[in-house]
Length: 82
Image 1 (cartoon, helix red, strand yellow):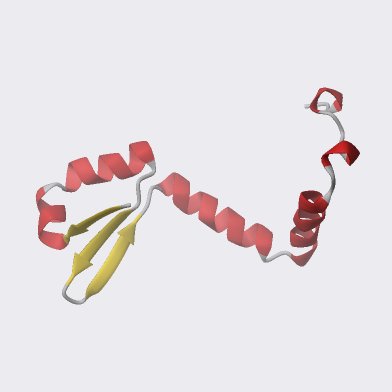
Image 2: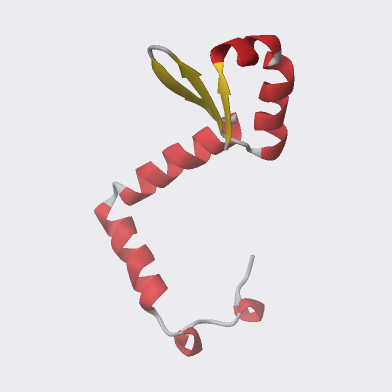
């Protein structure tokens, strides 16, 4: 995470936004009124999708069940039809 003040952000906005987008680097901008966080659109969509999945109790239970399944009980990747 890159931390900067609002003045530095104003002076380097293009470079900082480019780094946020290219490298998924979170950007924390500090001001005297509080802080703001900038993240790439890709990270934003990932965060929203994660929240949506985890807010669905059935899906959440399936993820936990899968996480707790021993590897030897799982289907081999070569057996999965993509």
